[in-house]
Image (cartoon, rainbow, N blue to C red):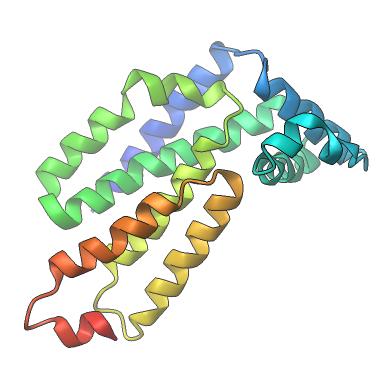
Length: 199
């Protein structure tokens, strides 16, 4: 029963060590987003009219997210910490979702492999919108697949949609789980759970 907590603790510790030792400079798009967040923090919203944000307006949501974090502590390390917590949460959610479909042993193997996979492990020091967005999407999927027997099953759809909406503000890729969710529900429906699945 304690495995998810231990998994989160290990994933978070390893990622914090990586973020504090592998200091990735903010360059290219990440530098633009960092600069826009600093300007927004000081009340300057003129970045909205610049070419970068007119071409890729979806990045404005992540600028606001970074600004909220920097309002707590105006240091790049707060963004690394948020990335580490989000990434560790994603590792834990991989276990909890996989356990629902494949059992504890396979879920532990999958989550431990993901925990130490080099790309997501070393990505935490990059100021990317993908990390918190992925954590929100996985949380939505977890709520959707793990709470079928709740007293008010429709609430899981509401929470799933709300989390996907917030994730989409950070990075517009929520269409993938939004498309996959109905397919999963259709595959999982049978005669015994048809009524409860449709409620």
